[in-house]
Length: 500
Image (tube, rainbow, N blue to C red):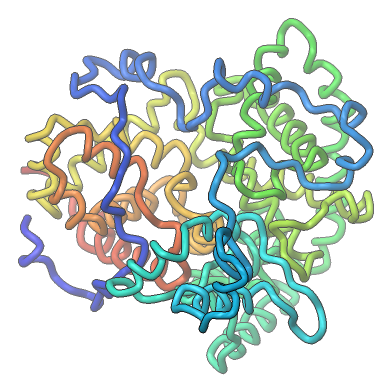
């Protein structure tokens, strides 16, 4: 239906940052031909990643700490990036003495303002993270040109201080935040935690300080009885490393070598722009987690996309021991027992998640096919204009929504937003399997204006596969979840709304 007829439960902010850029590179290999079947579509398209196996054999080769130079053992490993224009901290590259004596231009003043963000704070030199540097690679001149039409906003780190981020990137603890944190601490300190109350408070976001234990409880990994928690944690952690001793040596056997090879290839693709996930120690942890899960779940085995689902748990459980920038933290500096606990907890919580959506990863992935079809039916009811626009340009929902379901929108949102999203998913009874459908529908409608401005199949698909959410924070995710809840309220218990 037309947007004018929608019921407005909440007043949405129309000026959401991170809109679709004007200049978008055109793809060369996109086709408007419809796939006659799911198998043909799967064979004719790449997976959910942008790295091609043939082009990046050197990059995806096995990484062994012994083969690294001594100077790289304790540093973060980052894949090579395209050459980019360096950002000056003083003047333009070609400026001479005369230029240096001249009054500072608007560009120089703006650059000096940016320098203060990576200058000295309380006598300490603060260096921006690599992800911030990547986001700041635009020239100052293009920044000034955009400044007239877009509000100037500070860059939000991809991982650091995730739970504290709002849309402006300011980690401010308000009175309301303090009150919410006290409520969480009270619930978690009770002899038997009330899960219903915990879910109710977690729906609108979980404070960073209590997120690790709250996730363990909401996922079903920890018991609600406080006296049993330490015993259960020790038993489950020992059980996981028992699996390692029993199975991990078989990764080179004929039966499992293909599974291990695919895992080994996919690990460097996991958040390649975040240094944390390029550390050899972290990649080895992910390899063990994914391999053990795969051989213990033969019905599905390892499927590309599951590697992404480890990252939120790993970051959240790591944040329990890290006060600084998680994005650049050297995991190898933690005590060995702490590293082992983070690994085991990530494995069990990921297992609990996948237990509810395993049909997404069994043969032919029927769960994803059903969810994509349900999304198509839902969109046809809530916004007929978009649905008809897709039909007009022969855009199949499977061509963009497959990745949304397979990776739970992790490839569409920054990691900080994914973690905030998962706060709500774990607070919902069927958040990952059911509520995610309505989040995807709300996410699609969010880009209504940009979708209807495209004039061909190629432009539509490029937009839907590269939605500009890099500046999103808690504010945008909160609005997205509110709209998803509105859609669920209207359609979840009204099956006739799905039918024309």
